[in-house]
Amino acid sequence: MNFNIETYRKNKAYFRSDHLVFKCNYHIIFCPKYRHKILTGKVSDRLKEICFEVAKAHDFTIEEIETDKDHVHMIINCNPRYGVMKCIQILKQVTAYRLFEEFPHIRKTKLWGGKFWSRSSFVSTIGSVSLDVVKQYIENQGK
Image 1: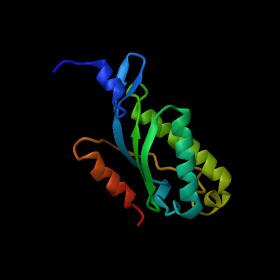
Image 2: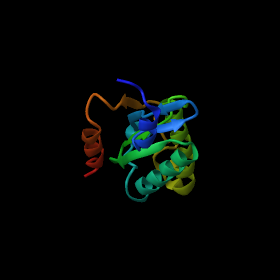
Image 3: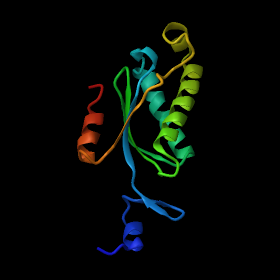
Image 4: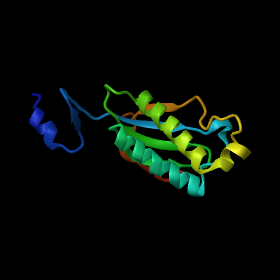
């Protein structure tokens, strides 16, 4: 099979940057500190909004996002030069700062230590199962 860059450029499923064509989908999960069930209602809604703002500002995409009280699932697509862990780091930093600022009761009642997210994360490339299966799984979180 011959590689044809024009075919890849026409295919909307691929992204490109200088000297690179890519499609790197990752299923990521992270949890609030102590797995407190705080990702509900307005906090959950605002978390999702902030995540999309962060993704846009840092040039990666969030394909799906859903919360289930004590964790958040996402499918992100990021440039391999930037790296999935950098995306997670920025998402955690910005969302923690802004959620503490906008919902101060969380810090006072649940996360008094000043850390919103646990240090751990789950990362998996999407390929061992189909993208549709992972999307359906994420869409059904919290229901």
